Amino acid sequence: MKKQFEVLKRPIVTEKATQLKANNRQIVVEIATWANKHDIRQAAKALFNVEVEGVRTSVVRGKMKRIGTTAGKNANWKKAILTLADGSDLDVFGVVAQVPVAEGQE
Image (cartoon, rainbow, N blue to C red; front, side):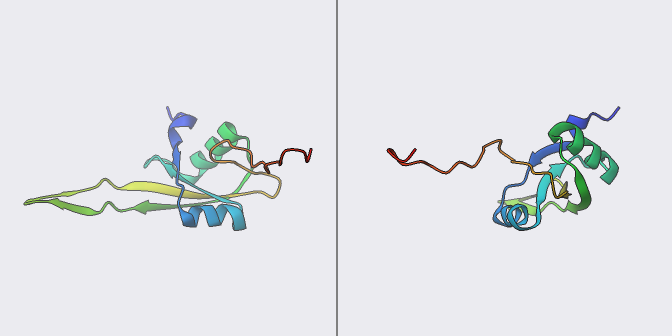
């Protein structure tokens, strides 16, 4: 049985992902390799209480690595870009943006 908390693994926080969130209301997350778009949409709605308009997925191929004479490969992983509806917003780290108030200006 697929668990909703197993579908979404972790948020991807890069410069590009931050720009997508700020400009296009899109969140980038790493997901389970077996998850499909329907599973991802349901998991986001259940876990974060957000309305998802669209889901785009891609498989990121692992890079070849070499240490001395030994060659290896990083594992493949899957990511999803979730487009949120107009009324929905998701703060990845759970930190509310607050403007600092200088002392004496309350």
